Every structure is written in C-alpha cells, then in structure tokens.
Image: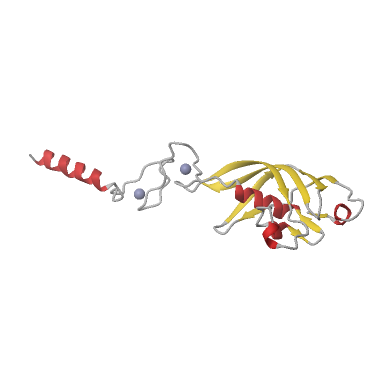
Length: 177
Ligand SMILES: [Zn+2]
Ligand SMILES: [Zn+2]
C-alpha cells in the first residue's frame, strides 16, 4: 500500500492519519522468506516537522511464521509494531543528518511512502535472535532428520559432546569388566 506524501510535504502540510490494509504477505530478509499468516490494518500518522522532515508513526500487529532454530517447525511469531521514524528531510550537508534511519530509502520514494516496506523494515529491527517452538524442543536427529519432539529414531548418536563419549566409553569398559 502506498501513501501519497505530497499533501504533507507541501503547504499547508496537511497531516496524514490513515488506516490502510497491510498487504505484506511474505517477509523477506537476506536469509529467507517467511509467510505472514495474519495481520491487522496499519494505522499511519504522518506529521510535517521542519525542513522537509516528516515524523512517521504507525502501528500494526502481524504474525510471521519462522522456523524453530532446533527442529525447523514453523513457529507463529507475533510482531506488535510501534513504528516511530523521523525522516532526514532537506539536508544540504550530509554531516547534519541526525536521523539514524539508514533504510529510509527503502520505504520512501520521492512523494510516496511504501507502507509494506516500512513494516518490513520494522520487522527486521525486531527480528528475534532465537526462535524455539518450546523451551525444551528436542530438535532433529542429525543423522536421519527425525523430529525428536514427535518420536525417537534408532540412529547411533554421533553428535554427542566429546566429553559425553568419554563417559560412554567409561560405561562400556565398566560393562566389560
Ligand atoms: Zn522446535
Ligand atoms: Zn535418527
């Protein structure tokens, strides 16, 4: 969804206050594509500040399916976004740029704001460092790929910590005695 910024950027700088549908169906980052399974409407407020700067605020709640770090099953992850950005405006001297918003160019193109790009950028900022389907997810077997939350397999576990194999050898020796 695109929002026209010409009214807010030019006199008399009429503010934007709109509720628009979220059209983001797939979130992409450098690593993969993640389906957006649910999303609320996006409420966007844009106010003119000075020197061409805009204050952009937005709220949107959406659910993105992200694979569990251990077992790869999709985990419905809710992002409750509270966007607050200030654009660079008419800067003549690059050193005067106060905005830390380095990806502004992704969502503003001249006189249009790309709402879905803005949301994508915000999801990226809030991307969780760790995704687990549950705290005690058992992961998958490194040998056969069996999801160990759903059942066990008969593979010899070769991925054990080396310290564990020492213990295992001790047990073997013990049995032989
Ligand atoms: Zn898992
Ligand atoms: Zn296995």
